[in-house]
Image (cartoon, rainbow, N blue to C red; front, side):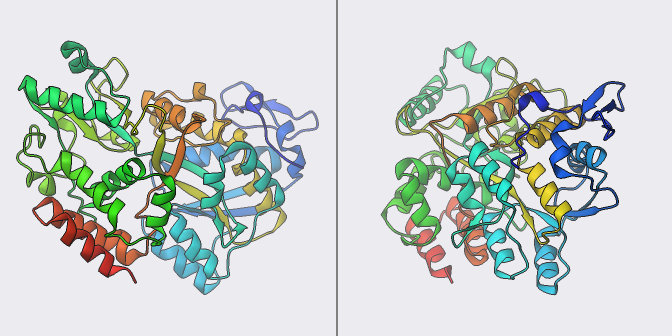
Amino acid sequence: MLVAGGLSAVLALGACSSDDDGDGGSADGGSTDCADFESYGDLSGKTVTVYAGIVAPEDQPYMDSYKPFEDCTGATIDYTADKNFEQQILVQAQAGNAPDIAIVPQPGLLQQLVATGAAVEPPAEVGANVDEFWGEDWKAYGTVDGTFYAAPSGASVKSLVWYSPTQFADNGWEVPTTLDELQTLTDDIVAKGDNKPWCAGISSGEATGWPITDWMEDMMLRVGDPDVYDQWVAHDIPFNSEVPTEALDAVGNYLKNPDYVNGGIGDVSSIATTTFQDGGLPILDGACSLHRMASFYASNFPEGTDVSEDGEVFAFYLPGKTADDHPVLGAGEFNLAFADRPEVQAFQTYLSTDLWANNKASASSEATGGGWISANKGLDPANLVNPIDKLSVDLLQDPNTVFRFDGSDQMPAAVGSNAFWKQATAWITGQSTKDTLDKIEASWP
């Protein structure tokens, strides 16, 4: 039976009763209907183990969102988080002691886990829910060699440019809707002469350079198209071929132009030594006007910053070549199972519903003020309190959006989390586009 839930069935995140009438008292004094969980049956005494890399405080909303399932079915969900999840889950799968369900953050890692032979296919209800609530692109990322394994979970949007609505209003600047308009806006800011238009930072310890990979991926979707992007990620076209070269040069048009960067921080070379967390902060004092960074960047502004459409800082969609082009670069997680016991399949089904997505969004809004979104089309924006979350969900739910997952996360580790990062850093400090892409191409295993 397909358990879709429906927006009308969004549960209060308190205790729920599994008594005969399916209606009981909640922890906050309200009541919650367990009717939407009846198809899962009585799972009393059963335990489902969940393993993830999502640690405190972001882990609490996950556990809160599981509670209605626990209270209405009698099952226990045992959640464990580990900062070394990506290494440990592979070890566990290969050793035959994997958890019942893992929250996997990358399609590449998902493929590696399936290759161990330990993963199991979900019940048909999960696939049906994904067909209903997500686009084909998302289902494809949970599919390995033509077999569907994992429903999507959370998501993030990377195709955003942070700015100051106050500064824009004071100067009469409009949010651009095309790449040409973005270029015109950049030149207008330079002409005004009060500040450099762009600010950026790519320092991130051993991961230094990753923000440039996001920049290049966004430009691959714009100077090329999603099909070419897919070919590039799969290495069906060389890393140093025509479109990737044009894309990195398009990034350089902004980040390597001394007239455009690095507002409030330094010259072009300062991008390499500025942490990604600090890169966009000069927007607050007007030293720069634009900062390309993902939706999660909202948490880097000081506590009390008004992040809203009319506030101190907000974000707009990084536009396509035309106003009708709507590629969105992002990331997300997937729920992969390693057991097919009835209680595991029931919980995996719950995680694929709009009911769970709304419970999780509500829990995140209550516990941390937001910061969690999903591409689930059944997610009600009313359950989001964070304006950036609402903007991101609007983009993900837009029927014109063509979503593509972060490319470096799908490439072999020798490329995506090694050569790409390192050579991007060398590029911002002076290495040519040709030498940069040639060296990344040579690293492909």
